[in-house]
Length: 89
Image 1 (cartoon, rainbow, N blue to C red):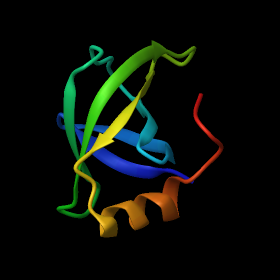
Image 2 (cartoon, helix red, strand yellow):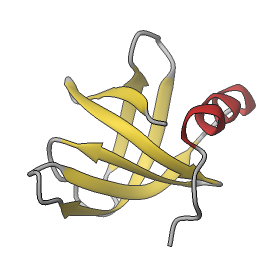
Image 3 (cartoon, one colour):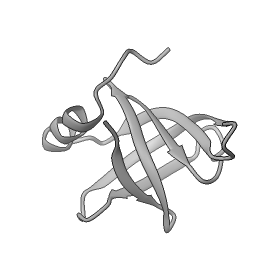
Image 4 (cartoon, rainbow, N blue to C red):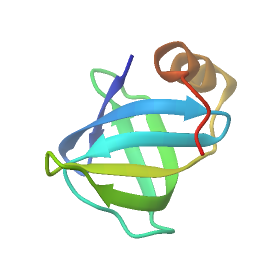
């Protein structure tokens, strides 16, 4: 299951959350160490992240991995309910 995000005015999808780590798909790459702030589509809930790496996929989108920053307990429960998946390596 994924969670739709709005990131820099474009659509992105949060695919996996494992503890403090995340994986998402986005239409552009982000530099390692870059701070990101996305909103969950249809809400005002913000998700703050720090990029670890971006990898171009065969379909032209990017898989962006990193860690979550300043996550509240309520937001953690929402993310886990939608995106908990296999352990990220």
